[in-house]
Length: 412
Image 1 (cartoon, rainbow, N blue to C red):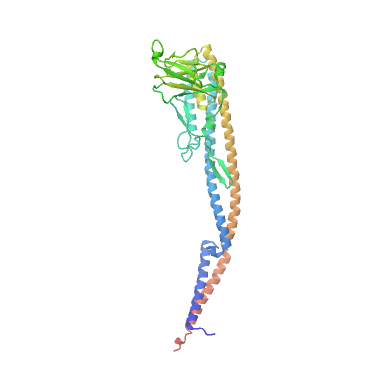
Image 2 (image 1 turned 30 degrees about the vertical axis):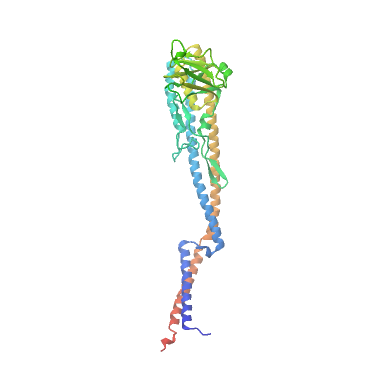
């Protein structure tokens, strides 16, 4: 078989290039520590490596989710603990206010601390996480869930949503609780009511939270709602501010008669309840009294403060005060039990996160071991192979140099 000069040159050059590529690839494997540099190196291993890397990225995201959820739940548990401490102090002050030797002035002095406790409790209810989202606002985390209304009480402005986050492929965990469930929808010790000022009113008068002064009488009307409507001044003689209380369901007048003269700050007593409206009223202004079996934590404290600030040392007011203090203690106990229940749920969620994180860590160890076997280079074998390939490259280069000198042109 005859080989032309050109063929000899090409074969020598091809040998050098092939050995050079082999050396370069092995050097790259040694420098990167990776056996599979491209899918063509090992198609089956490359497919498995890609799947393992995707699984690892998903676990990393789940790990970040768990860290965020754990921090939010621990913060919520801390804030609920502080709210519970406040309620315990409110209970102590409630018991203290029941001392028969206390005068109205003494009870009003207790209100100074109650006011601070109410403000502190609302601040805790409006707590935010590290991202500035309110813990207890449901899905409405960008605004404060508890905001004061014109009556001086607090309304819940959040929603009933509950946020969840994925911490594993088939596991999610709640990262918060809405304030309505925690602090608003609390079963009251007795049937009670809420008061509202109509947003359409022309005057600046507001209505207080009010008190149940006769449980039996109120029970006859419950769950009826009432509307206090102010009439034209000409409706009474001599002309002046006057109101009528009607049942919301049928408009029937409640009480001895309608058109009752009004003076700012006077008690409006009807159907076993008593409220006060203060300020300037206009004809057509309305105030709503809505029956309910629930009472928020803020209303419990606010109603206690209202009673301590106004109930005198006389037999009628003393009975009302006793009922108020008794119902307040029961409402506080119910609120504390409700918060305690949620705190136990927080503990369960934290346990789920801890267990899931532990399982993920075990899977991660096995996954990284398998990935290393498929992807990582065997340095001892690679270095040995690099030495051989370098030797072969050097040999090919020397052979090519000698072949060059075998040309007939060199003999001429």
